[in-house]
Figure 1: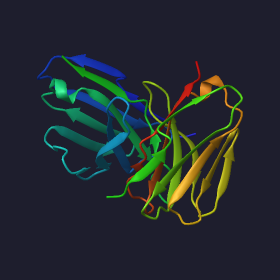
Figure 2: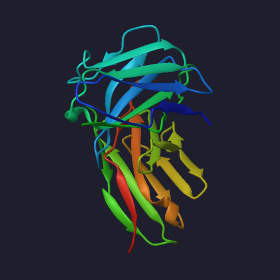
Figure 3: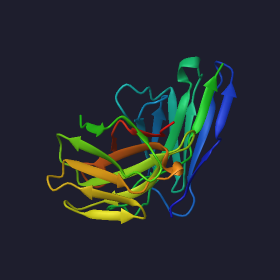
Length: 117
Length: 111
């Protein structure tokens, strides 16, 4: 089945640090990838839609200058949390859809646990 | 915006029991998906449904796309300990649109 790889699995860093998370589709090409945030015991909340070769589309309330998204190739999207603070600590999950579109479902990475001290 | 109401929020299972959960919406969905998430991991796709009335099985899992296109259920038969986890329903209102997620059903083992 489709595999999405997310790296790193967890990050612990000091307040003020910028953190980059990578999302790769390993056996398919993805023109669209999605970034989610999940708080403990809650559902997934879509942050932004990452479009290959163009600007990401951010959901209402998500700061685009805080959460920088780059989707430079059909198999890689990155999320950079800039100047991270403790309130940015969360579980970040990416997903990708096969570029052939239609009814292809989203497949998810294993998530990145981000802890800001 | 679209909302998916998923129930129950949590349930306890005993090995061998059948388990059922469902999602409803006030909006029509073109696709229904069921995912399972284990602690510290991303959701894994269990079943995808694309047509109203469609009934699909994956091993001990069975899911149906409601005729009204506003609901879906997931059944797990003869549950085993590894069925513990959080199950999410999700749907698209149209091909290519972002997914809307339900609140999740937490399946736990009876003590």
